[in-house]
Length: 207
Ligand SMILES: *Cc1c(COP(=O)(O)O)cnc(C)c1O
Image (cartoon, rainbow, N blue to C red; front, side, top):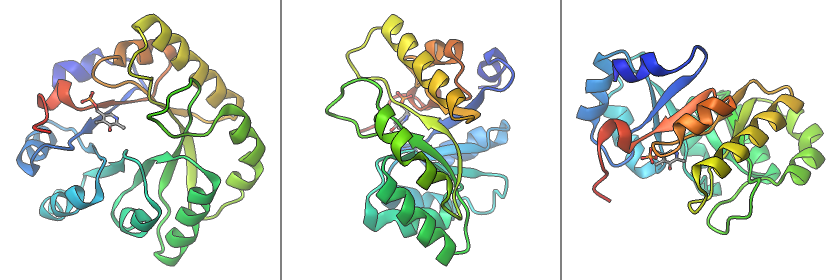
């Protein structure tokens, strides 16, 4: 893990996606100085976060699809949300964060290529609602997040990641959450600032 971090250029953050893995595995990586962890299901994350609350340096990132009825639970315990994919959801996060006296850092999930299995703003949608998004309180929009469609080869993925980086730059957003175990190098070359790595760090998930 330490060697892996040394491979990453300055400014690229490693998010260890611990879904499907135990709190023991998280603790092990924390002992090596890894403090950012990602989870995609609230029910699975809550007991883990609680069990590890003695590790005060940990920062939790929600990376899964965020359902409306899970927003309060997520806002209460997660520091970052990578998967805000609509204006309605952003407004809800903002309102509930204000009620809970929280201010999560948010990535807007965008979908720049057709993919029926993923959600996300199209470029046009995002531009249209952008003024409303940036006026919301209690959420700090720090970047864009994207997931490459499963079928794309690495070359096409790289092009998609470059498009995501360009779009973030156009909106003056610093962060890009892109790249997973299978395509992180292409994402880093394109200017990712957060790579989300699960199986490459933890091994295969049980499910
Ligand atoms: C599971 C997951 C990852 C990590 O996937 P790996 O291929 O195991 O690295 C990254 N991002 C999201 C949104 C995920 O759900």
